[in-house]
Amino acid sequence: MSSMPCALAISGLDPSGGAGVYADLRAFRAASVWGCGAVAVWTVQSTAGLRSSRPVPTGHLLAQIDELFSHQRIESIKIGALGSRANVRGVNRWLGTISPRLPVVLDPVMRPSRGNRARLLADSAAHSLLEMIERVTVITPNVPEAEVLLGGRIRSLEEADRAARAFVGLGARAALVKGGHLPRRGADQGTTDVLAIGGRIYHLRGRRVHAAVHGTGCTLASLIAGRLAATRSDGEAAILEAVRWAKRVLQKALLHPADVGAGLSVMPL
Image 1 (tube, rainbow, N blue to C red):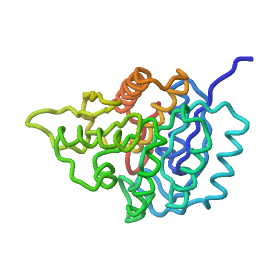
Image 2: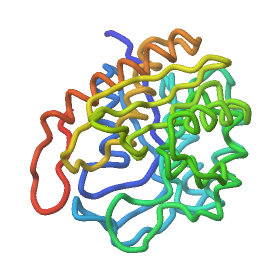
Image 3: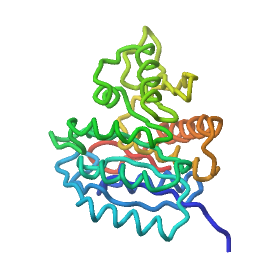
Image 4: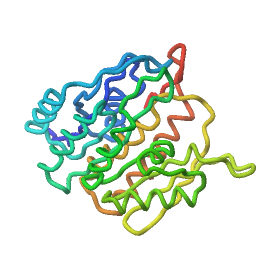
């Protein structure tokens, strides 16, 4: 019998399967690790958008996490939508009880890409997320999320560089500021993500995909977490390799999205 590392997702339940725990598990499988998930927030949504959300009580969320962590070989953790400030604080306290060498990838999801005014986490809980950063291996905000967390505008690659460095300054081992929301430069049709690891900055170029696809952010974070679990390493070289690998896998999936009905397309990894 062969052993297999596990990656744990702590995130929301998206019934459409395009994002949240279901997407996390597909990403972990693409990284050749076993995926398990603790649900932090229930949602009513489809590929057409988020209609409502309700956080899982913190005690129940932590009970899920404790049960999984006690009996499965967890080699990395991906944290997505947590639903409430209480859940953010509860998960942060729990992270303080485990080995600091266990890779933790934080996708600071607060707002859905589509839907009504429902939120996955109130902007007012941003400070609580910042308190978690010192326990994080990689944080993966898009530009709007980075603006909420850092309290400033990001409108250029240079400002994205500063934002990535700021997250590292707050305690993250690495920060990936995704550049899809940055203004285009002339005829440039690509995107540039900024990765800060320690004192180094990497500009990771990619093709801009014009299709509207559901769950890209959470899938990227989960691919990174899955790769770190598979390699069982958390060094700077391993982080850089995991991010580059995850971007390649995501780019390939984005070039061949699946139409499953009304709303956004999805990515069958």
